[in-house]
Amino acid sequence: MIGHIESYSQDIQTGIIKYGKQFYEFHIDVWQSDEKPKAGDDVEFHLENDSVYKASLIGDYVKGMQPVKSRKIAGILGLLLGAIGLHRIYLGFYWTALMQIVVTVLSGGFGVLWGFIEGVLILGAYFDKDAKGRRLK
Image (cartoon, rainbow, N blue to C red; front, top):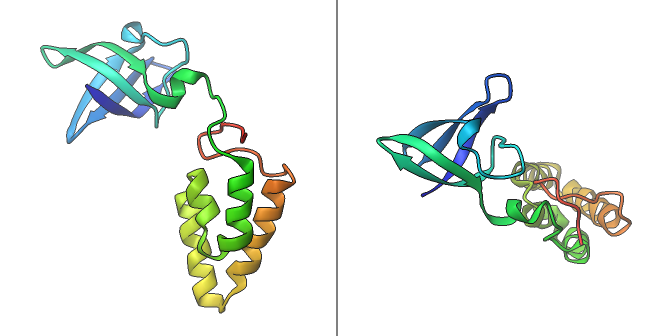
């Protein structure tokens, strides 16, 4: 099954995996990946008698934080459509994108400047990571 780590405590080496509306506890001794588990990770896990007996990272995490998002695309989106936060949505910063939309609407267009400046910063490599902490290509 594929789930999502809701929380993980390094102190007690135990975490919670959410699958649908169900929650399952796991311990580090069932962890199969080299990377340490952390909240927000997508995982593949197996159950036996409602207990997790095997869990590992899936998706982009397995690639070891390889870049997947393009700096050029994000920068151009910021320059052209930054007022609606499209560059932030592309990079996975959904709440910031929502705030850019709100600022644009409430300020009568100030969000255009905000998005344009971020587009320049992205293209100039001052803003170089996506929401998952991966560097931009």
